[in-house]
Image 1 (cartoon, rainbow, N blue to C red):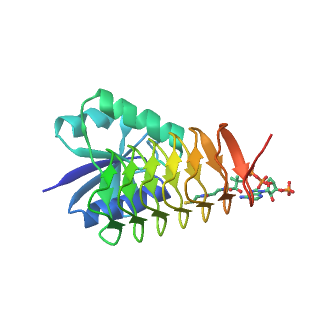
Image 2: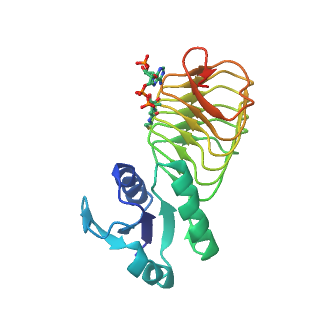
Length: 205
Ligand SMILES: CC(C)(COP(=O)(O)OP(=O)(O)OC[C@H]1O[C@@H](n2cnc3c(N)ncnc32)[C@H](O)[C@@H]1OP(=O)(O)O)[C@@H](O)C(=O)NCCC(=O)NCCS
């Protein structure tokens, strides 16, 4: 029996559960703060306040299935402080080059492509049909949304969100804490944290 506890109970968690199943986990439980939900799909939802310690004692693997980056970070840091095994999950239909380094708790969804020379931090979401090209350095707790793409030699700090269908051109540096809205096209370095939209990307003041 391979057991995993997925923190959260949202739509994103359902996708993470599917990923866990495809990675050989046959005992899957969600752990959430909302005690009113008992089941999500076919898997039980346990109460974080009362049941988390049980799954830690039983040596479950853990992953955080929370889309909102600041909460994902907070929950992963809480798990780290408890010394649990936080796993990286890669969909069998993702293409990840041989030398790519990926941090704990990062999930790589179906159809994603991560090319050689790239490093991805911990707690990231590399979402469905996105791509991260060669020699990228992606920080911790970033989200490369569905259908978003970064070209070669992009660096991205921590806690960045590249929205659905957004694009980052090659050789671009993006600082930490940058939100790039759906469909944004980034063609210049983003050196100031904030919310960026449009083609080319402009910061909302
Ligand atoms: C930023 C976002 C959350 C909307 O934020 P919001 O504060 O609710 O913005 P609103 O919908 O009120 O729009 C405010 C204005 O910005 C514009 N706008 C919103 N998102 C925009 C975008 N991505 N690109 C260009 N303009 C945008 C709206 O048209 C609106 O313009 P108006 O004032 O002239 O009518 C959303 O547009 C977005 O980009 N979401 C990303 C979703 C995503 O990537 N999900 C990942 C799934 S895997």
